[in-house]
Length: 331
Ligand SMILES: [Zn+2]
Image (cartoon, rainbow, N blue to C red):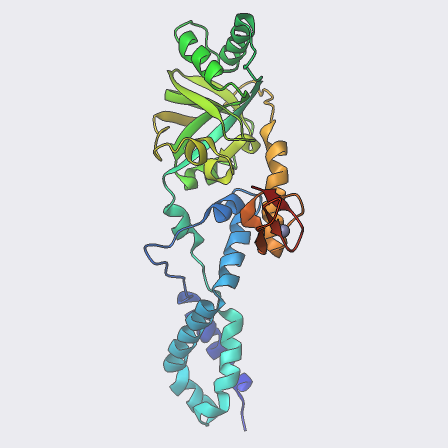
């Protein structure tokens, strides 16, 4: 008796072509979107593929359903032809047919559809300038900070001096000078591929001094156009910062920095730009990554949400303690 694999090469090719033309795609519900971890992952090297794999694995039942649906379509399409060729019944070749199809079916998770839903997100760009704590600063210190900021942002007039000084004083814990903007995630993902260019800010630009250790800071707006060297490492997703200035701390409206415009421009002279934030944020990211990938907590990680078995000990000293790693939080 002939088996499925005795079918002529042409017919097998025809089946493959049919599969290719009808490759299944994820259909995302209108409420589906990416969470903060997903977006952070996307911003990493190879992030798109990793996220796609993660979504695939997390939705394996849906994948199987889509595969089965396509196989059924193919059976309907080719049943008669195969029966004719093999002179037998469907039962005799169905299993082999399914196995054959599976090898050629490639379910598309349509991550790009989810990315498109994030067309309004807050990001910021690190200018490389760090400001000191100003609690005990003299007028000269403030003046010095002002000049460093003006230098960094290529400001040559005095028109923003008062605004900037106020920001320096209000952001009294010091921190990093950054530029805030409100934009499309897709645009950011494209931007990340740029190299050896400048990023040009214009419009009513939201600048801020932020301290990511505690989320404190202050911001102001300047109507000014300036360039900074562009490196993707200096670009940050606001919600990915645990103590983020906009939401976690200030409770800003989501589009507060929408008047900052930016574009990538060619530059003749490639300048350096410092990066101070990445390293201080990287330990936290490391903990997040470990938590995300292994579900294991870390002794000393004070983020409550990254421990599973926290119990409350209602005895002196009252504290929360993680039963897995021993991290404790005293009330
Ligand atoms: Zn723990």
